[in-house]
Image (cartoon, rainbow, N blue to C red):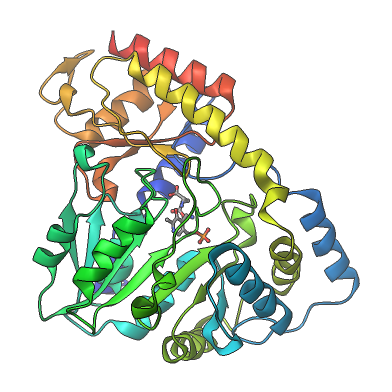
Amino acid sequence: MTQLSERVLNMATSATLAMAAKARELREEGKDIIGLSLGEPDFNTPDFIKDAAKQAIDDNYSAYTPVDGYTELKDAIITKFKRDNNLTYTRPQIVVSTGAKQSLANIAAVLINKGDEVILPCPYWVSYSDIVKLNEGVPVEVQTSIDSDFKLTPAQLEAAITPKTKMIWYSSPCNPSGSVYSKSELRALADVLKKYPDVIVVSDEIYEHINFVGGHESMAQFDDMYDRTVTVNGVSKAFAMTGWRIGYIGAPEKIARACNKMQGQITSGANCIAQRAVITALNEPPSRVQYMVDQFKERRQLILGLLNDIEGFKTNEPEGAFYVFPDISFYFGKTLKGETINNATDFSLFLLEHALVATVTGEAFGNPNCIRLSYAASKEQIIEAMKRITEALR
Ligand code: PMP
Ligand code: GLU
């Protein structure tokens, strides 16, 4: 009998992708499922980007690319970092990968030794924990609460650091809470880290442009943090390019070179056509994709208003990304349609079965009291989903 490795046996399946697959399966059985589970823009990739990809095919871009990305793409990324974030990077500090997910996997592989601790403020993006574990690191979950807008406080950070702490990973805007760290909040965390110069920060900024309130702030903007921060970004979200699979980092040169070496043995680099298209995407100002951000902002207002009317849903006010992360622990211990709800997973499955609405359990994000709803769906779908949830819970 084939024996699979402990590595894969010990790994959890991505809950976001699993829920999306389950919704797809039910749809194929004829059920009218509304999918609010997957974090994926429901827009098409903009035409000016598609045109660049078509041109790249005609121009015979078909060979292996440099492992860390085309020079023109690295230059477009350098320009983007300067223009949007006032961060200065040079070519050897940039690595292009097969999605930000692979950027994160590279970072873990090149930095974590067995037993190293990685601080993950909860709720964190679903894959952080398993990527860390896959590399024999130890995720250290730090619970935040809805009352602090799901943000890590300096005192919590200080308390979580041990001699084994290697890194802290967080996203801002945050998937799944939509929380956005302000400059002063980041500075306060940086002040704690000053005392621990060996701790590296992984700042996942993939939702940077999907930000409704203030501006976006990067940890690497602080001179004392620049040399110990890896800035992760990508085009999946703001440019509606999830399937194109391009992400990238700006990092201290030593880390970037190690990521380049790592992916040279694993993927040989990201897809050539997608890379050419991303050169065009990043060389344009972010205002080219503002129409999608405006839509997400309207939908956020819509879903927050509707959720407010449903008993037992307590939300923070997300300032970015396209998720809401309500606390639904009100329902724990209650029996709905003959089913006892013991936890967020039960609740999410209840909604799938009785409201035909796909969500993701908060347990996958390190918070057992919440569920995540993605509002990267049409207004009609959002309205219908909230109506169905209200009826199922009645
Ligand atoms: N980070 C966060 C916070 C995400 O939500 C996602 C979701 N796709 C990723 C990284 C990975 O993005 P991708 O691999 O599509 O670039
Ligand atoms: N990041 C998206 C989400 O959180 C896409 C799914 C995934 O990459 O796991 O739903």
